[in-house]
Image (cartoon, rainbow, N blue to C red; front, side, top):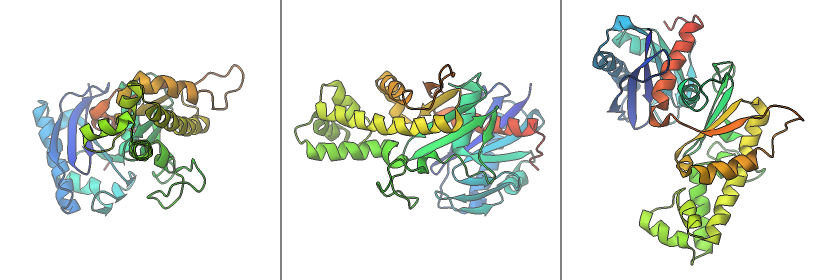
Length: 325
C-alpha cells in the first residue's frame, strides 16, 4: 500500500493529512497560516506539518511516496513554484525547494480548486468517472476540470477559471477588471448581494426579519424565507438559479463531463437547490439526439477535499513519472 501527504494551504489555516492510494484520509492536522508572515516561514511550517502528520499516522518518511500541495493562486509544478497568490505573500515562491529543505520527499503543487476536483473524482461525487468538472460556489466561483483522470489546467496551470467567464455583457464589475463575470451572479457572495437588494426593495419581506437573526446578509436567507412562502425571496432564488444554470450549461458545453459536481455553502440547501438547478441547467446544453447527458451532483468531500485532492494529485504526478525533485 502506498501513502501520500496532502497539504491544503489557505489564507487562514494550513491543513494536512496522510491519504492512502484509494483516497482514504487516515488523519489530519491543522495550524494557523498567519499569512502576514514571510513565505519562508509559512512554507517551513508546511513542511513541519507534513512531518507531524506522518508521525501522527504511525508512519515514517519511507512509507510516503510524495507530498501534494493545493494552494490558491497559480502554480508552476514543473519548476516547483507557486507563481502568484493574491491572498498570500507569494511571488515565484520556491515551494518545492523550501519544503524539501524540511522533509526530503517529492513535492507537487497545484491550484486548490483543481485539487478539490481531484478529490471528488477519486473519492467523492464523481468517483468512477474519468471526466468531471467541479464548481465551488463561495466568495467567488472556483472550478476544477478532470480529463481522463488527470487535472486539466492549461499550458500555464492557470486555466479553468470559469468564475471569470462573462455571463452578462457589460454587467457588474468584477475584481478581475471585467464586467459581468459568472462569479458576480452565481457565487454565494452574489446571492447575498441579491438578497440585500431584494430586502431593501421589499421592506415587508420575511427576508428582513431572517436577516436580523443572522446579523448579516448571506446566501441562506432567501432560501429560508422562500420556504416560509415569501414571494420576494422566491424571486431571488429563481433569479440566482437562472444565472447559475447558464454558467453550468456553459461548462457542460465546453467539456461535456460525465459528472458535474457543485460544492460550497450554498449547496447545503440540498434538493431545494439541486432539483430546480438540474431541471433548468439540463435544458440548456447542446445535446444532440441520443447523446448521453451529464449528471449533476452535490459535492461529497466537504472540508477534506483540499487534503485528499492534493494527495491524489501527488499520486497522479508520481504515476505519470514526474519526479517532484
